[in-house]
Amino acid sequence: MTAQQSSELTSVTLPDAITVKGLSERLGISPVEVIKRLMTHGVMAAMNDTIDYETAALVSSELGIAPSPEAAPQAVAAVIRSDEEQSEDGDPRPPIVAILGHVDHGKTSLLDSIRETNVVAGEAGGITQHIGAYQIERGGKPITFIDTPGHAAFTAMRARGAQITDVAIVVVAADDGVMPQTIEAINHVRAAEVPMIIAINKSDLPAANPDRVKQQLTEQSVVVEDYGGDVLAVPVSATTGAGLDDLLESIDLVAEIQELKASTDSLATGTVVEAELDSRRGPVATVLIANGTLRQGDALVSGLISGKVKAMFDERGDRLSEAGPSRPVRIMGLEDVPAAGDAIEVIESERSARRIVEEARREAESSTGVRHGGLTLETLFNEVGAGNVKELLLILKTDVRGTAEAIRGSLQGLGTGEVKIKVIHTATGSVSESDVMLADASGAIILAFNVRTEPSAASQAETNGVEIRTYDVIYQLIESVDQALEGLYEPIYERIVDGVAEVRQLFRSSRVGQIAGCYVTEGTLLRGDGTRVLRDGQEVADTNCAGLRRFQDDVREVQQGFECGVVLEQFDNFQEGDLLEFYHQKRVN
Ligand code: GDP
Image (cartoon, rainbow, N blue to C red; front, side):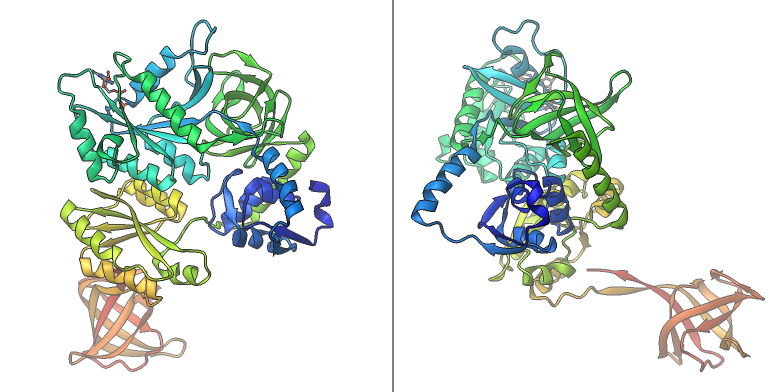
């Protein structure tokens, strides 16, 4: 199916599951276009991610192309299909590996020593540049490592829709054991549903205690092979190099089970892992090829940026004329600097690439601030009703561990037939950027109990539409989630009194009606406030302040000890001696 057919296409059959790329081909539009449309529905999917029939059908209907489910294949069709699948599946490709773990447990050291000791056979000089990713060879088989340690990079990419890691290595220092960021890393990897290998590092140290590490991991439900589980754990030392080959072998093993495949003959798609503006060479981006082969001279689109591969280099700085799947390459020739996690896609011609970008820019300008993600407790019920949400993912931050366990226990019991509750990460301490990134990447809501939100995390949450709910009473937290599940959720507001004034004189204006001449006895009156009128301790009205005056001037606020004129919305019945309570609402659940 080609792009030319798109204009005549009125109907399409779709399978139960299809990749974004596959869908774009059936609909005759670019994968970038499909990704953008999915984003407007809160679905973050990369080129090679699979989406279900309902989601694919939604995109198709939007384009005016009527979707219908693909019929179960007949015997002959099955043969043809399996042939097609063969070619679609493509050739085996190297695994892409990320290294995560607690600070100082040796992520960087491991990446460095793997890099140094496993140079591609026959290459002199080794890998000299840090370009965000590198490839080594073990027994003739290449393995690609993402050379930015830590889960920030890992999750930031996921948050942008790029799921590029095939195997995650969680490093635990044998002398230090499982630490908070180890748990965080484990939860990030789990949320990404990426297979995990544990590297028990610093095994050379006398204080190394691998058994304790394995035990601590079991407490986190990561059960290693020795303990009867299926997670591979490999003792290593980044310093002496001991165990590194075993680690690489484990990667090979885990990767083999996944049967990673990609086509080498299609136009390339990939993900930017690092990019910057080089003063001499212009924008330079390190790209990991996901599918197809990238060639010098190819026209490219990455988000709102187009370009052409003017030159390509590997991690040794050697020039390449082409690069296949899982290969990290440094490319020159983009017209601007893309962001890490952005997808890139080769387009048939430079002209089409420019046209796609122009269209995408126009659309970006016209869609005013549509955010992706953004599941909230208030919208949960509707999303469940619409079949968009089957699992409520939660991140729980609390002041002490005991509370976390209590809350977690109560929450697990709340799931309904339609929606399951899954707490994907629990930790003590304030809500951090890393939490927000995890929430953004997985579509989770953050529940903060008795902890604050770091300002940077708050602004990031705001930008990305991630909901952070703060509580200081456990039952309120549980109740909000419960009510959200039942569709009964209504936010509770608390009244915060800003100021109180006493009515001392009455005026009448032909234009605004009755004006109360007041004296502010407490706090500050604010023009936008809600106002309660109290007479002999009884509320006679609850309305809003419509105007505040000092002499002839309209003012925004009046402080304690000053006189002023007050006009209220839809209230014309002041009496001398009335008390006016000015307040604002604060959301408390
Ligand atoms: P990262 O923060 O996880 O990237 O950790 P680094 O790679 O920066 O390592 C932290 C410290 O641990 C450094 O001083 C390293 O030299 C040391 N280190 C890392 N790996 C090993 C190891 O296998 N054995 C020993 N003895 N020290 C190590």
